[in-house]
Image 1: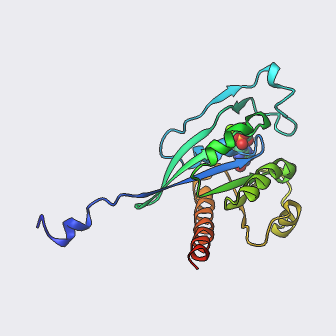
Image 2: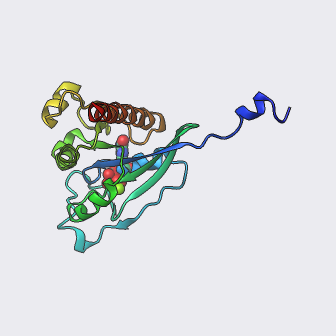
Image 3: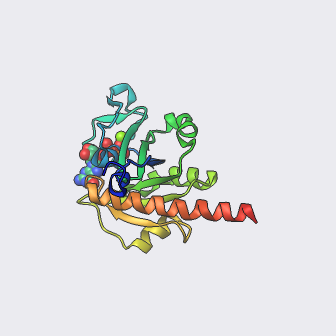
Length: 201
Ligand SMILES: Nc1nc2c(ncn2[C@@H]2O[C@H](COP(=O)(O)OP(=O)(O)O)[C@@H](O)[C@H]2O)c(=O)[nH]1
Ligand SMILES: [Mg+2]
């Protein structure tokens, strides 16, 4: 029995690990999203916003927020037995741009979180991934109290390429976030596969 097929099937597979970035403006829900799905206690480096930080940290529209992620959020989720994602939240503030190139190393793809009340806050992240050719999916975090817009309206406002996917999500909801992650991985794998195919010809 010990050498039977059934016991062999139980041999744990070494999972593929993929790195996904979570980007978007300040207060859009990056820390919330990573925390909602992570199986490990998310590593967070939140700092209480200080008076000194106020002129830099634009709190307009996020008045309830009293902490800010100074370095990054980090989390892990097993999407399937053989597929583990490591999530890296990018710092939301402009003064931490220098960290982005480090974080982007080896990333398969990215989520750009957006809030329809402050869409322009997500432009920088979209530009960044477009310029570097990193596949990304846009997820609109549907805060209650924020007006709902048709997908096409949001796509047009963000000037998204037709092949970039846009989803609505709730960053606090594990299943909703998982849907976004699956979409990002699938999108990124299709694009990466296409790249490999064209490199081979
Ligand atoms: N109502 C609501 N609040 C949210 C949602 N996502 C995040 N928040 C809140 O919005 C604030 C900013 O979220 P946070 O994850 O810290 O944003 P970050 O700066 O992008 O990391 C926090 O107080 C969250 O609790 C959401 O989907 N709905
Ligand atoms: Mg944060």
